[in-house]
Length: 304
Ligand SMILES: Nc1ncnc2c1ncn2[C@@H]1O[C@H](COP(=O)(O)OP(=O)(O)OP(=O)(O)O)[C@@H](O)[C@H]1O
Ligand SMILES: Nc1nc2c(ncn2[C@@H]2O[C@H](COP(=O)(O)O)[C@@H](O)[C@H]2O)c(=O)[nH]1
Figure 1 (cartoon, rainbow, N blue to C red):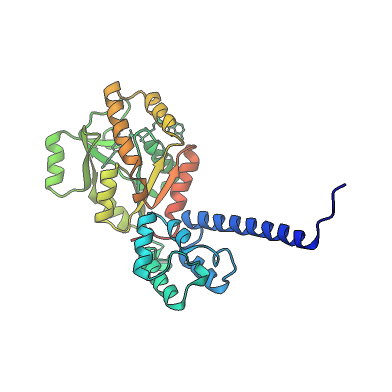
Figure 2 (figure 1 turned 30 degrees about the vertical axis):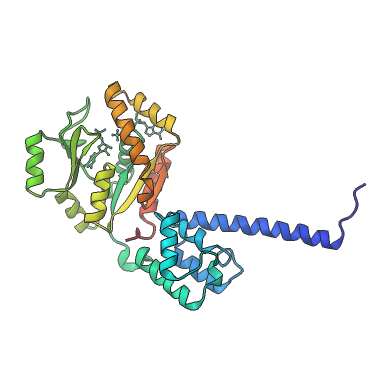
């Protein structure tokens, strides 16, 4: 027969259960911050209201790295600039530190207001064959309110591809003309092979009409859009695994061995850049990934 626990043992067991629950609550809060379920400003307000809450007991270091595009070295520079010690918890900040952090958050991750309920420019990028085109096509079919931009390219059409629907297929001279006339928002040579570019006019027209626009482009293009349109929302699509990515590329059967190898080399570089994006979405199921992209773009605006 087991002995009944003495009161101190009961206390220790209860304290340990409480600590586990608190750790879980903080982990869940970090996920909510990362996936934009809750704004960082709201978490800071919760921490101020209750220092013992999951928000209040969250370490400032964990809070910052839960934010998009903030890695450990950036986090340390931010803390340095704000004059906040990395050992602090959110609920333990002094009034001046809290004000400095709130001002920094508002500048980098402005909270949505009524005037922010406007059309958005959404960039979907990711490695070759991750399913960008498939997810974009799903969004086009199920969200006709979002305009899917049609790019210009110097690559030859694949079987079934229609000029003006899948791409505007142009030759090198035609592409040079588009650049010279300033008609492209961004352009790049992708996979060291062909040139691709985003026509500017249809995007400006759609945004002016209050429609959101989706661009399905490569990493170089995504970076150019971020510079040209800092309000754009950048989403990086990830494969469930590297092997699945290779399988999708091989299974698509649209490239020869040499082109596949070239694309996979580019894919490694692109995957290493995923932290530059506002959001990361894993494309395990097309419909889920498409829904996530659309939902994320309706969350609070991307950091500037
Ligand atoms: N969630 C998914 N599950 C299984 N297969 C998928 C999924 N999403 C896309 N695919 C398949 O993976 C292959 C590559 O998809 P897709 O052509 O859309 O990729 P992509 O990212 O646009 O590629 P690229 O950048 O090379 O143009 C296609 O055969 C597509 O049907
Ligand atoms: N920078 C841009 N990249 C683009 C654009 N349109 C498409 N792409 C990217 O090219 C590759 C290859 O496409 P594929 O149709 O030949 O398989 C893919 O990663 C696209 O995202 C664009 O306008 N600008």
